[in-house]
Length: 68
Image 1: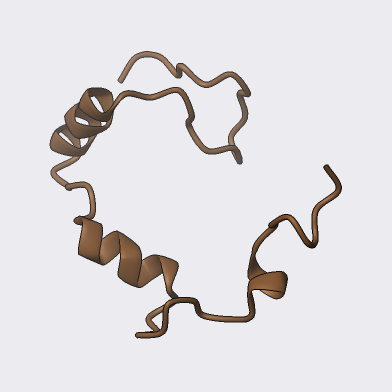
Image 2: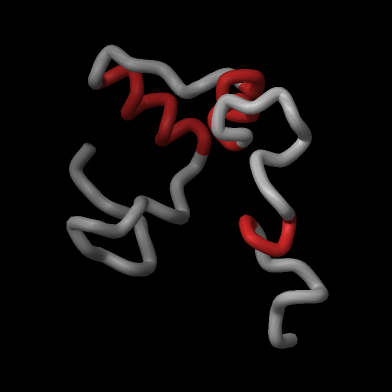
């Protein structure tokens, strides 16, 4: 789209600091779309109907396993 607004640049790094409108324009330019909320949640749960796809301590940082 002409520029990469990310703070950290690199071929293997995700794009950050991007507005929803910029993401929408990119998707339209490549004839794709952003996932719906339900699709995003399904992907985040790794296809599981459970609230989480694993034990909290093994899949996320939270107050009990992080070093504040």
